[in-house]
Image (cartoon, rainbow, N blue to C red):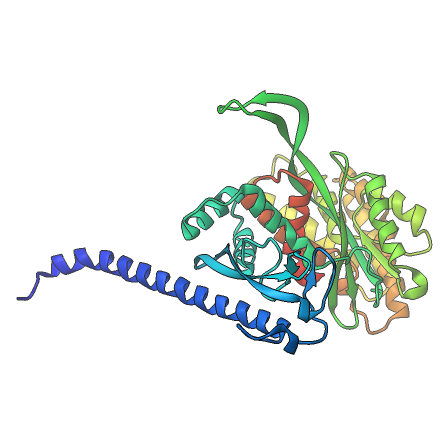
Length: 431
């Protein structure tokens, strides 16, 4: 007898759930069986004999080693049953029977089997899932809930947090690695992030536990981006989290000194720094790289001048927007000519035209204006370079947008190591 459509639709989700659970159990059983067979094969290969074969037939040294006497001779080793061990994978928890080997001295033999690290309780696929969830800006508690639901057990928050922070170890030693190819142009800028810092106070939470009181603070992350104008190639060289609430000279010097120790020097090809107008950064460059030209970012300069623009109150609506547009267009045209002389002519004309009406904006433009023309000197020495990538820090600003997007999702980071892991993950493709 045919069942009503409503009855079939009602039973379908339950049927799919039962089918999925059966498949999940079958995959776990198959994985357990396959791994147990592989572990036994590795022990057979290390001892060079199977079950019930005399040890006198297996001569020579093994990669196994006795933890008691330190011997590696196969003839002294014999099997000693199994020990049960759990391994958590994304498909579920496996129960493995790890072979045991004993030495003639009575000591336990260390096997170091491939695919099963010492004291490993979580598979590498969990690490990949944690990295994926981190890209989606999952909190550690959200990751824990997802892993707990998959494994039908409880995973520690600290364990997941350590795996998230292990992202930095994917590029081990890169901060001390010598620069094989020194970029001719280095862009320097900072992006602001939110950190939770301890105040020194201790309070009890709802469960009666002692907890440190933390507050939200803004910290600058100073990033150095190398650029090769002839190839159009870019690469993140390093970054540094500032100490204070603002960009400071000491933090910039730490970053620049590390780069200099790795080979960033004019003798190896460095020709230009592109920066904004931050005084702490300028002082740090003058102290350490006084012989390298510095280009003031034109985009930052234009933005500072526009901030000082004062539009007459009599202008409203469309006339107000037209006034602002005319000012910005004439301002941006200053740096478009092919020669430095023509740019200076446009600069003088702009100052004469707007000084009576916008004295503050013109005064802001006149401040360190000559530093915005440094790229013309580099174009004379490098004919194949494009001025588009020498006037501003736009390439670095695009990376900063990626960091800001992650910060908006995360809200705040509770440790410097967590922030460093996030930065490594966001910038990993550019390292």
